[in-house]
Length: 115
Image: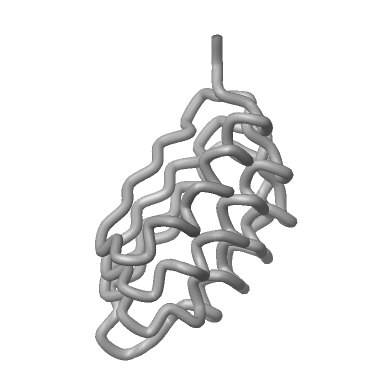
């Protein structure tokens, strides 16, 4: 069985309890995760104030612009972040939204990759 929105929401809701987490890598590639799951992940990432590195792979999922925007909104306020990799390859995230998220997360000292 593939992970869908319900699984991503459950993961997202539990992220808030990992306040000391410094690195995270979540790979949802080739799953049924959509905007609801990505929004839940995004909404809860903001609680990870010690986070320094994040890699999120949503390639070939059902995530669209709303999910990408939620991820960007949550990450922009995490002051400790040094490395961000977001993979939105082959999904419904528009080039305009990717560029907006890129601008939102571009800061001195932060290595940023968005696909």
